[in-house]
Length: 68
Image (cartoon, rainbow, N blue to C red; front, side, top):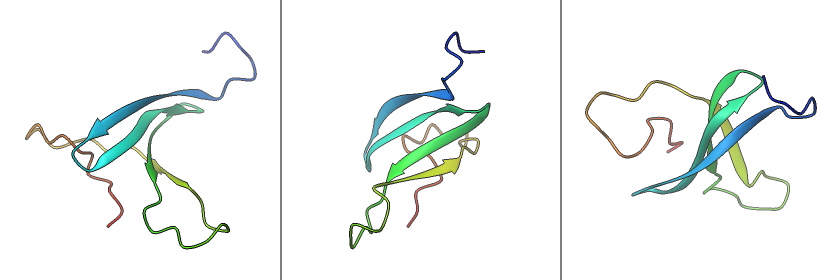
């Protein structure tokens, strides 16, 4: 548990061949966060938060959740 009662989780910035993303946990849920590459206007989010899924054992540099 975090020392600060207001803390919901923690994130780490990562870099892959496809760009910058974040990984971590929020309220005990493992998450991965990607920049919204399809943002067309200010009403759309800058980042997308997704449940983290296990990466394949092939040693791929990018997570499998890229939203293409």
